[in-house]
Image 1 (cartoon, helix red, strand yellow):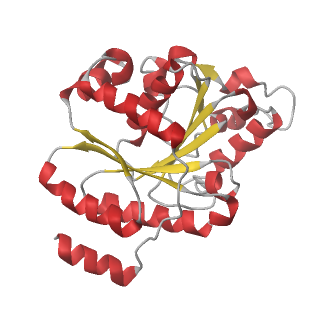
Image 2 (cartoon, helix red, strand yellow; image 1 turned 120 degrees about the horizontal axis):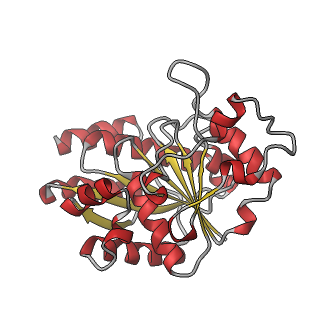
Length: 270
């Protein structure tokens, strides 16, 4: 079983990357599960025809007791495109409670119902702006066999990636490893130099660079991942190649920048 946690700053396109990878893994004949670990609960939307599914937290708030038999798998585990399993952990409304609660509750259920054991590839799409206890659960509990960080060509995207790398180092005893970076939806090739310098400082491999393509907007309108809508296009081929690399990747412990190193990097970049 290959379990991959995909982290990245909000807006980096990590859900788009996750959905396309899920399609590519499924087309390799691998039974695939995608778990959205973000209160926005939109990770699996493109796998469900553009529709959002009910979340684990939604069901708990409706009165379902996660410790009772009435909380059956079909309530929260839906089948999407290419037979991909889809789960959204969800979270409380803004200003109400802990955003990581949905992840903790969801993984308790997955353990109780032995869901993970039924799949060959599991992708966890995790909010990476703040790596709090709940959002770090795939790392802290050794659930993921590797981490992919999705970055853009903005400084804040790289700042978030550096913080995620620090969390990987913190949980390395639990098996946390960085598989590499995916540079997504870049519009200015000239800014890739900063990303490459960042990756070198981290000791991280750039697994794939996915340039911005109008096909993403078209796929969004149709409610499908690019890999399903236009499987033979250049962008889909990049995700196909990336899926193969991830199956072989073993991962390393990164070397995140400390505050002084980050400030130097920032001055050299801007």
